[in-house]
Image 1: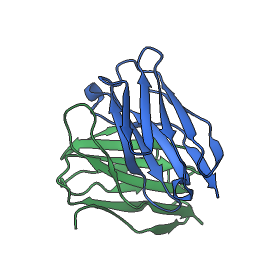
Image 2 (image 1 turned 120 degrees about the horizontal axis):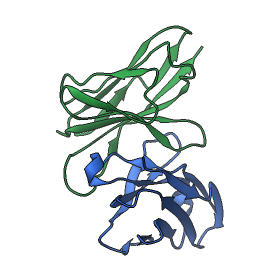
Image 3 (image 1 turned 90 degrees about the vertical axis):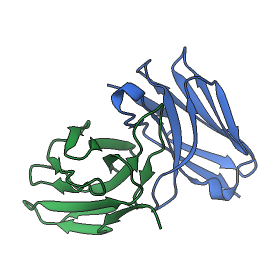
Image 4 (image 1 turned 180 degrees about the vertical axis):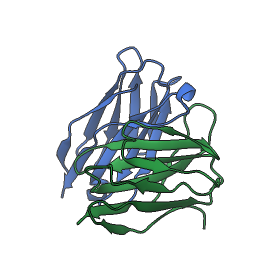
Length: 113
Length: 114
């Protein structure tokens, strides 16, 4: 089955700096890569996703890049703000497996004012 | 107000007891999922269902059981066979079909063995 590795497990950045989280996946047939944000005590919520037919996607201060050859994808947050502090999860799925998501271990991001 | 609802928010179980966690959605989604979240770890798939009266085991199904008698409901039973049930349980739902679909999560149930 699919295996998703996520690094780093914790990330501390100064407000205004950029944050980068990286994930690798094992199943070359995976074709959908979402990122979820989970604030303390709350449910995970989708913040951005990318499908395997594109290499990059951007939405305001967040962007995701995908390298299918190397089987890795990354989340980039620019101009970080205190409200970006949360746990971020990457995930992967493939249509043939019913789109069930396999998650990485999560990254706890702390943005220091 | 559309969404996915889990109950209860907190649940305490004695050793040897079975407990059932509720998950209901009114999003008209065909697929529903149960994930387990342990401190500092990612979400691990317990069971999933893509259609009524059908479900499949995920990566950590041992000690758990589910049913899918209605499209809106996907209850999870944590049996006494689950040796370490203390965790945060998340239910999710999504549409079926196409390349990748957003999973919508409930607010979770925190289960503690006492």
